Image 1: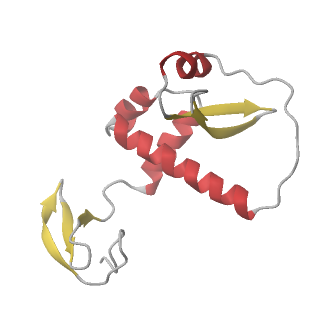
Image 2: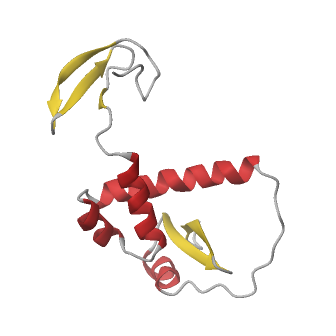
Length: 136
């Protein structure tokens, strides 16, 4: 059973039909509808695992059977969580001598007009990066 609205935290909501076999709810506080547990955390973790192992967004969306925009939303949320973890943990200074960006740099340099996300692999560690163009 749902305890509160995921958007505003209100505990007042009513049932609002079914979607893909999952119960929908309408929040009395923010008037938004939501479902609980449409995508399991295991599915989200598997998508992130695939991304960290150099699979593309479209390939991941085909494997886990969700749209590419949903996969991107999961990656952005994972990135925000990593940023939060970096803020609350003490910073360790380490220098990276060589960074290889391959297609990501080419894409950002030529076609990019906002933000994008990429994967940095250095010394057997992976980090999800938020990339911006030089024009910003």
